[in-house]
Length: 312
Image 1 (tube, rainbow, N blue to C red):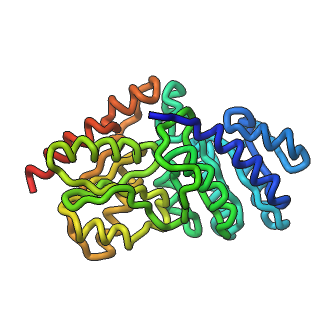
Image 2 (cartoon, helix red, strand yellow):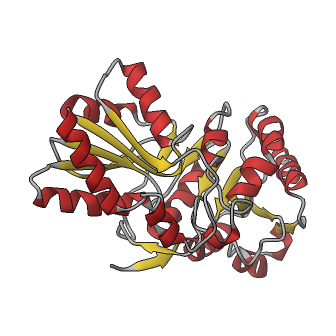
Image 3 (cartoon, one colour):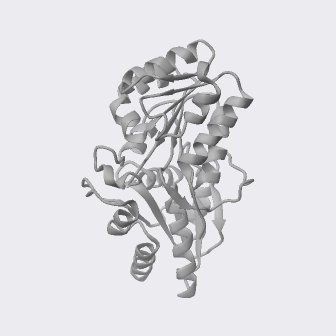
């Protein structure tokens, strides 16, 4: 299993984005090194702005730049942008539909040792509820790099949910990435596992184990949470007997909720099982241990799929 740091690749992608497009500016809130945008700052100091620990002001600054024709990338921790600057994102960026990109790093449990003040489990629920906002959750470093360029090409607000440390590599470097179109990574007729972010690797691993037990699983990377790929969701619902969603987010308001809403809109009644963080504040600890503790791992997906299929 090969791993690569998502935030390191993000920093290099931002450097390349800056080289190609002079309208790109970066705004951060005292997190130049943790978000790896110091590369951009060193190369383009006149297009880099550190506003200090003032996330609400950070969003206002980015919004002002967007009205002047710049394309700001706001780079901070997911928890600090989605919650601390929630009102400013809603009123200053989404309400006016400004072309601002928000990169929320250290998302989910990836900053597990930081505890609930630095972990983020509500960010997707918050961001996808805002009109005009597009929400993207890349699975690995290669997808994160592609997502940065896709966000630049997209006209309007984008929230990029990114991790922190090394994660297993799922995609090749040249894999295509289209906002709003899920990637089907595996064929299957019994179960559809729909995941995003680092849970895509866990879903693929679970599918391999389930195959040995005679259970045929297809796997989707639903990397765009909003707008949701209803065509892929329709196929999953009509062509398999069970849908399982896996996310490093509360099961309230995230991928599982979006899938249920989408199926309802489509009039498809396939059973859905949601795997995610329960309605509590997680404990403090290393990322992988926390994921295992809360069942965000292949072994737990396998157990839950087998149990669910036995009751259908």
